[in-house]
Structures are given as structure tokens and as C-alpha cells.
Length: 420
Image (cartoon, rainbow, N blue to C red; front, side):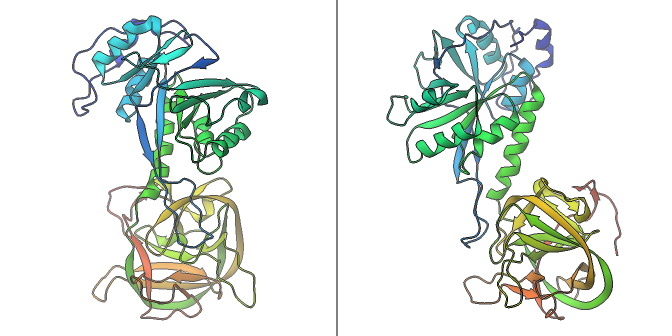
């Protein structure tokens, strides 16, 4: 690791709006390299909740994460990395035992939880050993890691060779255990890999970086995943007009996830109002169901993506993310696996919130029995979930997501705009 110079102190400011920062600054001293050992010990203090909710009661619907607390510790010598991490709620930092002075200086700047490496172990400020770290480079070393061993409740693994398979093996081995397992990660991409291993992921990561951007990227990843903890507000809209308009290039979005009844993508001709277009998960006598697909509409239409953003359907491609939403507003992130653009007959659908509303919301969709809009959810009352566009008529009620209409590169902005 590169050491700090005292010149970097001037870059550490005390934001008056952040209670996590102290008002007295100190001079940051340089660090020596941390000692590397086979077994080390860490503390668990800083955490950030990463939540996921299954988007539907359907057995086809799966959640990337269970409702759990994922913890993040920062291992760095860079004061700017420290500042960025504390501002984002991560306040546990690792120091060598020779750098008690640096920990003291940083503690004057911000409210941090310092951990100290000493003779192959890591202690908290009170001198208590609270976790164990294992360096794993061979299968035999991995086999030594099991829940029955004495780990003081927590384990940190440093995978020096393979990463994916060992992480999955550890998740499987420790399921149901009270031991929390963390992984040393040298980039946000590595951290994501460990947090998603075998769907449930490890209990947390130790982000060992000297780059501020790594902290920002990891926090942005957490923010995207935490969106699924919220429920979107969907509004009931009444269809005012339905008519055929001719041929156009429509987009089928094939996801890397299965969808169940009531789930689909939010799509619309205008960003101000997105219709919940149902997936092709329902069975029919004429064609097999495709629960991974949404026949979403023409190339010009907007589709909801993570972070409250939108994308044009024509911009979607393999690897991009979209938001899957169900009839009750539950949402989750899904990865696009394939996009198909083909020329098909289109139907124009227009709707209003109420009869006195002057704002019109519209969407164009392929004229086909397998394309449908989702209906409002009325408590536990038995009712139809979707209406095929071929059966849609004025007076029918569908679900709409209302939001700001002005967009710049998919980001909502405040400006005057007229769209028809």
C-alpha cells in the first residue's frame, strides 16, 4: 500500500451537516505496510442494510438477496478514502499496530471504529479479539474453514486463488450458522461477487482500496440493491382510447430472471407515465409461455431502470439492468439477457387518471393476445390480473407509474416540457 503524506490532510474537510465528523482536525501521519499473516482478526461495527423482497408471491419469482444486513469495513491508508467512506456510513478502519498515531489523528477528524493488526491478529480499541481472517489459496486450506471451528463469531476470508467457487462453498457451508463470513475485496466488482455468491451472498466485505472511486462505486451498488426494499406507488388509470396505428419496430426484452403473474416492466411513450406491461408468463393453448420475456413496445418507448432512471427500449442490450415491478408495487432488479427488435402491427393505448384530467398517458404495443397490461390490485378480492391489448377497451382500468416527465440521458430533471 502506498503511504500518506501530510499534504493530504488539507483534503479532509469537516462537513457541518454530517454528525459523523469531528470539528478538530489533526495532521495525518504516514503509514507503513501492514503485516501479512495467515490468521488475523477483525471487528464488526460498520454495516449497511442491503434488502431485497421477492417481487411476487409466484414461485417463479426469486430475490437476489434475502433480507439481511451486509457489513462493510474499509482497509486503507488514504485519508480521502476514509472521508468518502465515513460520509457514506462506513466507519470501521484497519490500521497496523505501528500506526496508532494515524488512528488517533483520523479519530479527531471523524467518528471511526479503528481496528489494529498485531502479531497476526486484529483487535478493537479495547484490545479484544473479535474475528478471524483466513488466507485461502488451496482447497485443503478452504476445508479447514467450517462453522464448528472457534471463530469468535466472525470470519474474514482472503481468497488468493479462485474466488467464485470457494465463496459459494463457504455460503453453503455456513448457512444457518451464527458465524458471519466476510471477504477481503480489492474492488467493487469483487465485493459484488462475494455479496451475490449463491444468491444469498456472504455477510459482508472488507474493501481494501486506495481509490475513492471504489468507495463511491460500492455505495452506488448498495443503493441500487436497496431500491427493492421500497414499494413503488402505482396509480389507477382509465383507458380512454384504443386503436390500431400500423406497423412499427417493437422490442421484446428477454431477462436473465423468471417473472410470475402480475410482474412486468414499466414502459410508456412519455416518461411522465409508464404502464405496467405484463410478462409472457401466462399459459395459452396456442403458444408456450415465456416467463423471462416482456413484449415491451416500440423502439422509442421509455422503460424504467434502477436509480429512478429511464432508458429507451432501443438502448437496452445484454448486461443492462431494468426494474421488474409487480401489481402491488414491489420491485426488483433484473439483468437483460437479449433484446429482439422485429417489425409488427402496433396498437395505440391512451389513458387518463380521471375524466377531468387534461394529461394523456399513452403507450404503443404489439397487437397480439400475449401482450397485456396489468390491472389494479384491489386487496384480496379475486379479479383478473391482466387485460390483453386485443381485449382492451375504453373504461378498462390499468396500472400507471406517475413521475417527472423531463429527462436528460434518462435522469429526471426539472424543466418546462410539452410532449404529445
